[in-house]
Image (cartoon, rainbow, N blue to C red; front, side, top):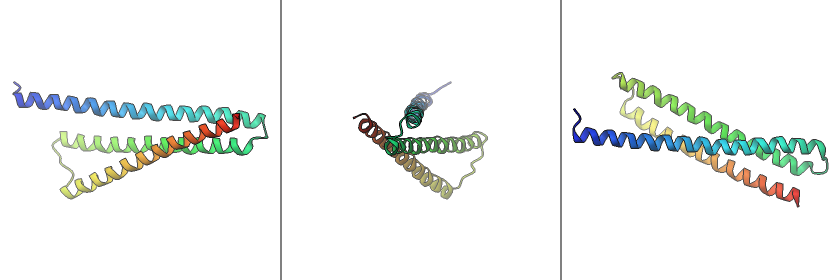
Length: 143
């Protein structure tokens, strides 16, 4: 039998899970879109570089921006995957009744998670700015 407190806690858990899932899916969709744009630009401008030799500098800059931006986003996927695996291991232990972390370990893990989050945000912002630079370079190329 569920009590009102248990019922509201389960509703809160469902709401938290919904927002966690929505946030994760949004990040993956956003990063996937940026990677797609970079992949298209890399493909197109490699072909253009082969066909037109007069714009090598601009084309090389576009390719470099695309490659760096892609690397940053791929690194975000990797770091997020590592975080999910770590969290999954902790949850698995908790469900088994094992509490593997001391308070000091938990504080250290929270600090590390905050630092990872900041690195992910920084890489994401740099990747977006590089895509914008790519757009400006393409405009210059087409002008």
